[in-house]
Image (cartoon, rainbow, N blue to C red; front, side):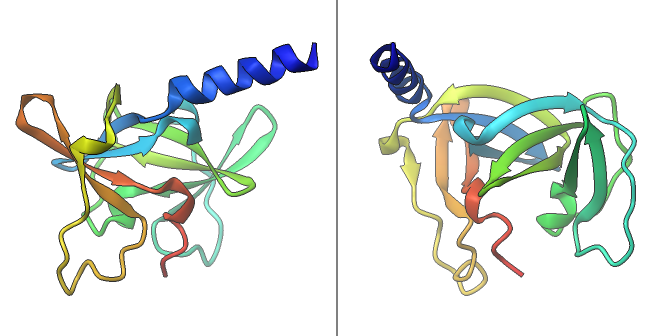
Amino acid sequence: MVEERTLSVAAETDEMENMYLNFDVGNETYGVEIRYVLQIIGMQEINEMPDMPPGMKGYINLRGSVIPVVSMRLRFGKAEEEYTDRTCIVVVTVGDREIGLIVDTIQETITIEPENISPQPKTSASEGISYVKGIARLPDDRTAVLIHAQKLFDEP
């Protein structure tokens, strides 16, 4: 029985390899590895806390779990805009905690092969951005900035 469960977990991991959830923030498309995505939920009431770091909007109570929520617009240095019916929260695991990412729109879940991922362009402004995994070439001549969920909050 234990061996069967191990094989099942291994098969799930193989199936999720190279799979990304793509979402929009402003006019840009971003992707995060699907293995870090726990769920996607609609916007909810966000409770504020005093002295929150930049980008942090507060927290939500999701089925008894308190989950901090971050505006990806603010995290990526974009202007905050009013939420729409397409705005949602992507709950991801970061280390041993769960964090909600407010995104403008969910695009798709897609397999992106490593040969379709280029390293981030090296500029003086991007030198310290360790959470950018690379730039993916998507169908229809689109691109997506792939982010390391685990490193997204390591930056100041």
